[in-house]
Length: 329
Image (cartoon, rainbow, N blue to C red; front, side, top):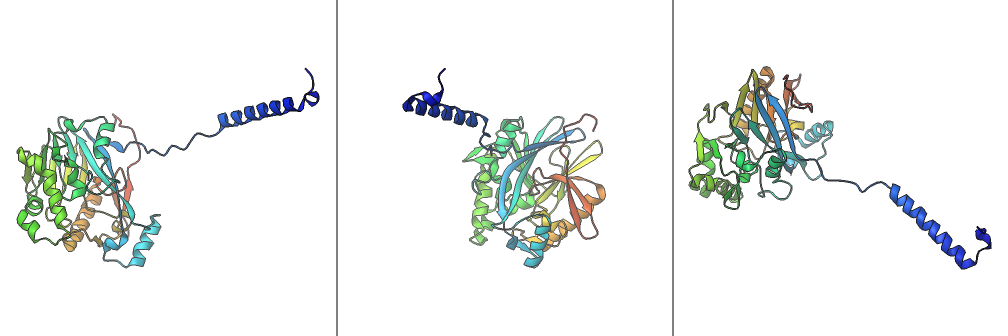
């Protein structure tokens, strides 16, 4: 083969172009793939005795620190910075629901926000499916309270999302949020929340599948009600015990773990009775820490499962460690 140096100029250009093309093709073949930014499905399982609990991620909402009451702004920011939480346009706050699968029932605790609060929420039903269940499998829905980020997910349009489920809420919350008379007397800014609650339960109420209970009741076998008022008039938590292990599904006892764990005396603007909410939070913290209960929190960082540890000042949140479901536990 003749040297390229003795080839005609046009030929040399063609050869060089071909070599360059091969070089770029080789580089392209070894370049890093495009970044993948889709997150994993939002579910996580935890064994509690014979019960399997599946945490479900509905999404998140940004909550500004100005909504927290009872502490100066500089102290709030200091507590958040200690937990590497940045309050720029609001603190990202998870919205979680929980499937509790007993030996014979599949029970959902809180149904998420659906589309009531915008595009960052509403993923709960998709995560039910990702977790291996279907909405039709749910036998009952227990609501900790009737705020939209816990109840709106019951319904899509005017159709029940969980067609085979009964829905349970406290009588005190139902008497407040489902009352037309109370809604008419509410401030204008609050009226939409009444409508969202009433629309959410409407298809279940129409077919006789909406039920209420009193404090201390047991709406379903294995589920005991712990009255935890303050955030709403009838805010309720649920205790599930199996083989000596206890899970407390506590709803909205905490909205800001970086602040309220260490300072349970800090309330949030959404509390209907802030002093009662503080009293309830302190009592629940003390009991849960003393008894070592596993906690499922609606607004704790996903999966929202963990324990409370008593500290010299306040409490700390100890999240569960990722683990497979093990037969020896």
